[in-house]
Image (cartoon, rainbow, N blue to C red; front, side):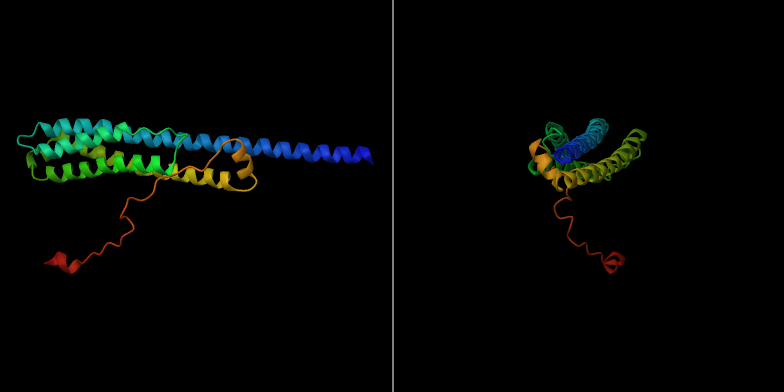
Length: 199
């Protein structure tokens, strides 16, 4: 009887150890997936930043182009590239800081492209048209990378917070991570009045 009890206890301990190792390895694997997705997000933002330099240089060549608009884009680009977040430290504050810097660059780029409308010769140049098309492609890639990153964060956070992984994760230092949120004001209802547009 004593032998059977010992074997049962050893069997339970082996099962718990196996489940613990399997759970730990699952957390490590998902953590690495989050890091990979974060690196992809940063790569897309870097691609945009690189393209912005070319876009600014192309616009600079236009006679009498508004200097303040260019200065805003250059400053926003500098700020966006200076915010560097380690994938191991994806706290709400860090993600908000990163998102705010990238949002500022997005806003200044939008103003630049709107200002270009007043310069038909610049708008018609092949180089500017090509750069504008590349920028649109990169913006789509950024949206896609952010979505994939948020999906990976969701899977990771679900594992880290679920019992019994929350205990094991806490022991080994696995913590919830923050994903991207919608931009401030994105939740507001947009009223479209077609009657006003007809006037």
